[in-house]
Image (cartoon, rainbow, N blue to C red; front, top):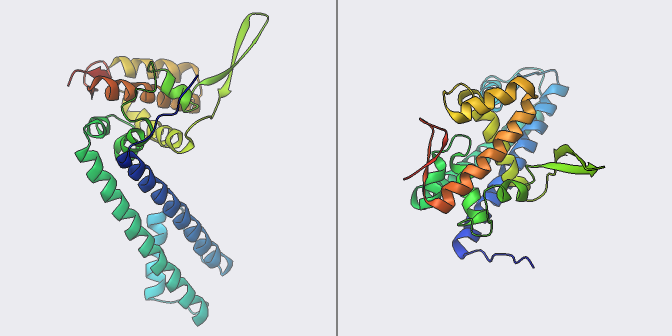
Length: 241
């Protein structure tokens, strides 16, 4: 029989902060896409990237083009103000999460791990606590859906795509973190770097990214359970604090 661990009030608050931030980020993305589409319909094309669009919109409002009506300029200005408000609210939640990462011992140790950072560290602490619900490191990536499906026929196992079960938000953070950390980690003269270089030589880059995300989940479990820190200067594995 499997039992669900009850979260503490602090972990519930932390999880709620992440959910509120995720909702704001999604709403901001929708707003930006709509703003880009409105201007595209009127012949104003901007390069990809939120920072670039932000700069170009501010320039457009400072020097309005003649082909935009007063009504559209007012709408764009209102949407830009709404965008600024969302930025401020997301920044405020980021500060709250960073403060928690500094105050919480487990999150503070996780932050130094490549590919995890403040968001990943606080989300992991909120989701798994002290990791006592998992008997071993490989149980965490399996719970997050970062391990391949298996189909066995005639005694021959066949590995398929990842299961994508469990906490979708945490899985997304680990995969994005692995994608960002892969270039630097694969160049390091460590056991982790050698493992990544071997994978890159025989597998697609996206497969390697998911494999690294699963590895980061296992490292995170070890850091939480054993009270250690990530030591990237040597083997790329957790070392004693």
